[in-house]
Image (tube, rainbow over all chains, first blue to last red; front, top):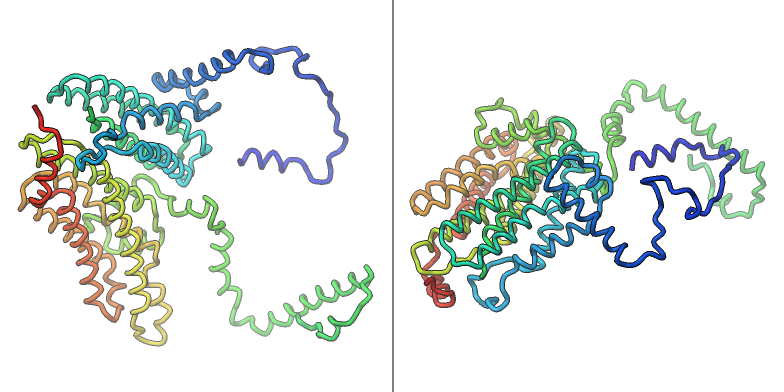
Length: 225
Length: 293
C-alpha cells in the first residue's frame, strides 16, 4: 500500500505534459524469457489446469524444504490452504453415525474450517497490529501452506488408526504430530519472521506456534475409527 | 463571526463573482481582527497551552476503523510482555509503582488477548487430559471433547471483558471527592478502561501453569491450587489497584467482589473441567460408548 501511494504522489496533479507511447498487440511481440505473456485462449484445459497445479505443488515443496521464500510470498494463492483445510476438516470431523453419542467430541467439519481460517486471520491481524510489513493475504497464504506438515502427519495418523491401537501406537502418533507441529512452525517462522521489527519477533512467532499447536492437538486427539 | 442578519439571508441578492470575492475578503479580515483582539485580552491565561496537550494526541489519532488506531495497543516488545507477565505473578520483582508508571501509561492488548487465548486452549487440552486420566482405569473407549474449547472461551472472554468493565464503572461512579481542588487529580487517578483490561488479562496468566497442574487427579491438591492461584493473582490485582480503590465509597465491597469473582472463576474452572464428574454422568457415558476389548 505504501509503495503504491508514494508512486501515486510522485506525479503532480496538473503537470502531466505530453504522454507518448506505442501500442502493440502483445501476442505479436517478441516473447522474452520469463516475462512472456501466456495466451491461454487456445490452449487445452489440461495445460491450464496442470500449470496451476504445478504452482501449488511447487509451493508445497518449498514449505517442506524452506530455503527460499519468494515463491510463497510473491505469488500468493489460496488454493493450497483450501485443499489442506478441506482435507483436514474431512478427516477430523466427528463421525456421523455416532452423532448422538455424548462421548463423541470431535469437531464438526465447519468447526475445523472456521478454526483454520479465522485462526490464520487472527494470527495475521496480530502481525499487522505489531507493525509487520506484510500484506494480509501473503500471510494467510503462508500460514495455510505451512499446514502441509500437519496435514501430512494427520494422514499418517489416520493410516496408523486402521490397525488395532495400543499405547505404543499412541506414542507414535504423538511423536508424528509433534514433528509436524515443529516443522510447520519452523517453516512459517522462516517465511514470516523477517517481516517483523526487531524485538517483536517473539510476539509474532508465539501466536503462530499456538495456532499450529492447537491443530496438532486436534491431529493427535483424533481417534474416531 | 455571525454578523449576517437573517434579513440579509432571506432577501434575494445578486451574487456576482465580484460580490463573492468582496464578502470573502471581509470575512477573512474579520477573523484576523478577532484573533488580534482576543490575544492581548487573554494572553495571561494562556488558553493555547490548555489546548495543546489535547491537540497533540489528536494529531496522532487515527480513525477508529483503521488498523493504525489499534497499533498503539500492540506497541510492546517481547521483554516488556515478559516483564508484565512476571509482574502479574510476582509484583515484588518490579518497582512498587510499576502499574502507575508503565501499565497505566501504556496499556497493551497483546498480552491480555493472547494470554486469554492461551488459557482457553490450555484449559481445553488439559481438561481433556484430566478426563482421560479419570477414565483411564475404566473400560471405556475414551474420546476427546473438542467442545471444551467453546465452554472455556465463553467463560474466559466473558470474564476478561465484563468484569473490568463493571469495575471501571464502579470506580468511575463511586469515587468520593475529597475536596474541591482535588477533583482533577482524582479523575486522572482513576484507571482507564484499557489499563483495567490490560491488568485483568495479565492477571489470568497464573492460571495457565495451574491449568496444567490441575490435571493431577488429587482432590485436595486441586483445591490447594485453586486457593493459591486465586489468592496470588487476586492479591496482585488489589495491590496494583489499591490507590484507586481507596477512593471508592464502597471500598470493602469493591475489593470483596474483585476477590470473589476471582475465586469463582478458579473454582468454576476446576470443578467444570478438571474435577471428577458427579456420579450421574458416568453411567450414561459407560452405557452408550463402546467397551474396549
